[in-house]
Amino acid sequence: MTHAEFVAAHQGGRLAVHVDPKKAAQLVSSRMMLPLMLLPVFGIAVGLALTGYLISGIVLFLAGFGFRYLVRRTSRKFVLSRSLEDSRFYEHAVAAGVLVIESP
Image 1 (tube, rainbow, N blue to C red):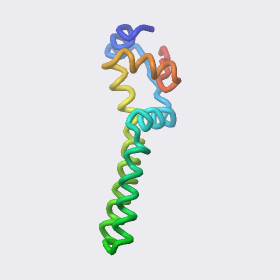
Image 2: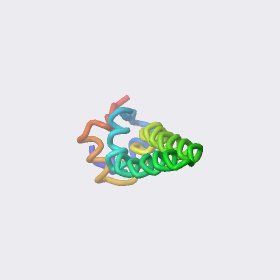
Image 3: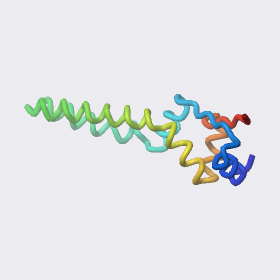
Image 4: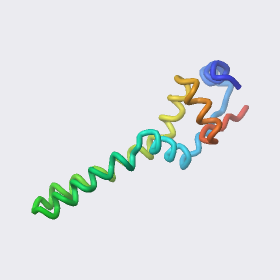
């Protein structure tokens, strides 16, 4: 199914789309380079805690985990909306098995 057919069928309600939550979380995390973004945040949080700013360090550490959790929870909606907008992302998501198209 081409991207144009996918968009038309989804908007017309003639298509059931399943987004695998685990694969979507992995795809979004890798595309955002989430581990690379969070490593400095966690390092700064530990540094703050060790230098006497314990509360600030704990808050920053928890904020980092909260951001990671938020990205993983919203990854299914992100994959679906991005697939509707971008044909290259759609093809990549289908090829990776993240986006499964089911005919009703």
